[in-house]
Image 1 (cartoon, rainbow, N blue to C red):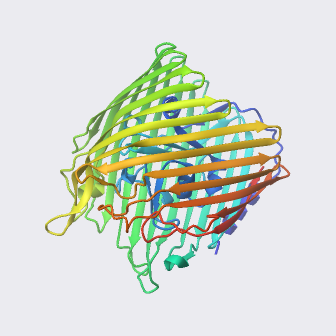
Image 2: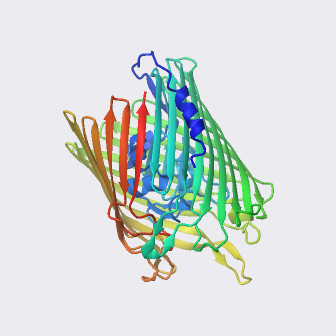
Length: 609
């Protein structure tokens, strides 16, 4: 049942009062992550706006699977889900919320399906290292969850309702108000699903697969004067996942998670100096129930206090100097894990020099020193550039040293934690080739990554699993993407298609890493005429090994999955949508033994006013 329908109905009524204020011209749009704009000059970054996210509104896994080069390993629809950039692991992927790294202090990663999808203004996916800016785990790539605040736009509201197969409900409410001095934005989202899909060919029924989650965001901005502005962004999330079981006689399990994030920012913008001071508080709480009818069997509570200052000084039109300092105090207490009242102090100083000697030349050099309590932190660097050789061709290059330090579980879990672990270190380079002709854009980027001191949990002689620094991993490959967009009269057409080749091996065993397909292809196309829009999506994954011995019998077979949808707009403010997922009824898995749904459907209504 849709338990929270009365709550969201009340919100709808609240936001439905007549509006007399006339929309004004946009004065300022503020994005909390100011560094992402610089990265776009030298790296291919995929930006997905709200309308893109709504095309895969089930969860974040679906968005990344069909609209990005990232491989997603998902233990059934809506369950535990982990990303893989360029052959790296989920722990080597940094999730960045409004410029702040929000990976778990316990696990060192983000569970994609416990990171709410709706409520962000846009999502950005950046392949390649970024530890100089975004810290630990930014080795394979970063996923940016961004909110923005606009000034001088008056009152705007939107409401989204969706119902889909397997008793899936999804609803989203957004309201914002701004004038010349003040900006406020509120969003709320609730999703739930019985998730009881069946794949008869695999003799699989997704038993105990139900889930529900809710999310609330509040943003506030105030212009003190022409040079000083303060911002506040907060998020509250609660999720409940029941893990699938293979028999009705098996014990049912579940996982609960609650996250709170709050970020205050003071921005100063002068003629030559710009400074952003951020203060953030992050809280994560989780509990695992080995039997849903009994008290939780394990869990934890983590708190992270962050102070970050970003000072930018423009020497002249050609040189720009950037100093970023950060301090973090992380505290954690586990439940039945041996982790009790632990804390860690960490700090860093980064310096970046940006040089723009001519209109078609751009270079950036960065260094960073980390100071992590009880851990020998590495010295990091990055060097990047862009050369525009012609109107139709530009060359970009990036090289960097990145890292990931051990998590609280790696260090303190009992039994097995290892206090002698070293940080993982990666060296990487990429060469981007950007082509542009009329309405077409093509990006081709070969890359190379080498990772040392990779942390792996392995069994010891006493039978206890413990993390140690073992693997050296080498990954190289190619990312490419073709984009097309054209408007003519009442017509608007878009196309985005990407191909990814990944060769990732453990150098000690000379074998391919698990859950890293060599080949991935994805494409999205849409055509809009007047009040109607159709869109199609396709995604192909090649054979994927699921064991360390490269067993072809245990590997996931190649698969191609396609979706299609139709959106119709009525009276300017109402949009009705219908979508068919997995049109060709493909049987496929992204994790062994957990097939994803066959053909299924959803219908939605979006109201903007």
